[in-house]
Length: 280
Ligand SMILES: NC(=O)c1ccc[n+]([C@@H]2O[C@H](COP(=O)([O-])OP(=O)(O)OC[C@H]3O[C@@H](n4cnc5c(N)ncnc54)[C@H](O)[C@@H]3O)[C@@H](O)[C@H]2O)c1
Image (cartoon, rainbow, N blue to C red; front, side, top):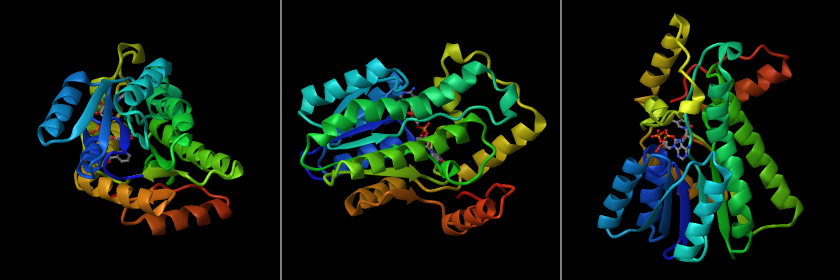
């Protein structure tokens, strides 16, 4: 399904991993529908790709808005007639502090984009993918959807995206569907603009939580490690290979095997959980 003339839809396409995926699919000769909530960055990214000869359609989309994601699907169909690869990738950070201190607006924002955006993508696009001769959906979670973590609503949302995508896999299996694949992308650190995701924080999220010392230290460590991570182009290459190989779990961290095995042992032993030593 990655082939010239086929259609890819990528959310969070104006920056980071989503832009890397868009560039990769364009280089493969696909039409690319680039969706993002940040209009100026989206316009710039799409016009740079178009100048390099890519066939792109930018669509301003807030993935947490069900109607907007349905409109994104309709825009893809009216421009290119189909969708073959859909990457539900848009995501935001959020506070790392004690969960009981996290205001409802923050929960709504982080879960609305990271989990609601994927749910909206599945509901809008899976029926369309099923109509194609071959198709694939990739949902972006995080290594913090697999490892135990301390990242507040973010980690909660990413565990949910892993569970959602596993369920989606079983749904397709039980219906005997073999022409539509699904994968869950669980990146470790990637060099993107994720550290400033509050730039897209809506007013409805309310005032940001004031960071305590421990939370500030955790956020700084996270940002430092992220800066040493993979490039979006490397991650996009790993995703393209995984789609071609129909690989379900796509983990990019170097220490993933040791950390996953250790987590399994912790659970079997009754815990407690320990956060990963590194996620690069
Ligand atoms: N960078 C990392 O280290 C890392 C690690 C694991 C997982 N991830 C995940 O990768 C995905 C992409 O993040 P990134 O690192 O490329 O960050 P990024 O900030 O560079 O890109 C995210 C994009 O999503 C867009 N976006 C934010 N809210 C949106 C909304 N409501 N609707 C549509 N678009 C929206 C942003 O405008 C931005 O263009 C996220 O789901 C993130 O959780 C990132």
